[in-house]
Image 1 (cartoon, rainbow, N blue to C red):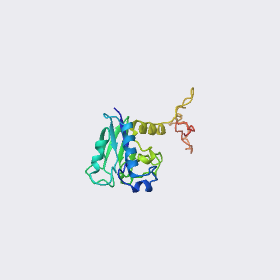
Image 2 (cartoon, rainbow, N blue to C red; image 1 turned 135 degrees about the vertical axis):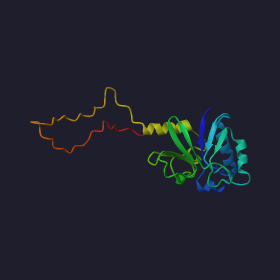
Image 3 (cartoon, helix red, strand yellow; image 1 turned 120 degrees about the horizontal axis):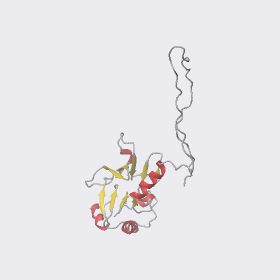
Image 4 (cartoon, rainbow, N blue to C red; image 1 turned 90 degrees about the vertical axis):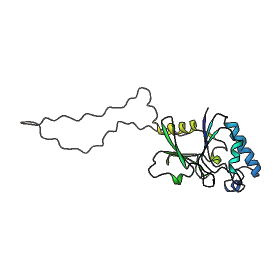
Length: 206
């Protein structure tokens, strides 16, 4: 069993093809491709976190009957059915806020955000803003695994290993001064750049 995440399918929304330059000639072709891509990726026992904007038209929830997996719905800006606005997913020591629109992230949240809504305006992975955009336009029109998202975040946030044989220098010990009769005078304070105990290594970016 695996966990997946995706957003912004927009079934039956013909104009989204033009708005987001989707590579389909018709809404029927788009609908079929989205269903097939989902079901080739997801198994029946998997869980999929869907971050909003499921479908246009009558009875949008009927599309869920065509899709494999246990689907957890987050409400999107075009969804008119009841669903939660956000949730926090705990995975491999990380807390991920799942939400449709990143503009609606609470001000007191300072961790990573996984979102939709931005379609192909934002990149898939943005480490500067600590955001992962899982709109289908940037995930090849298929769900992406939570494992992959967590792996990318950890690869970015964890420092690279030190080269073999290299160790960090310990913090220097402050000199001891003896006060009292005939003792050395109080030392003058020098302005120095404190040691952080960290070696900065240039990391190649893929």
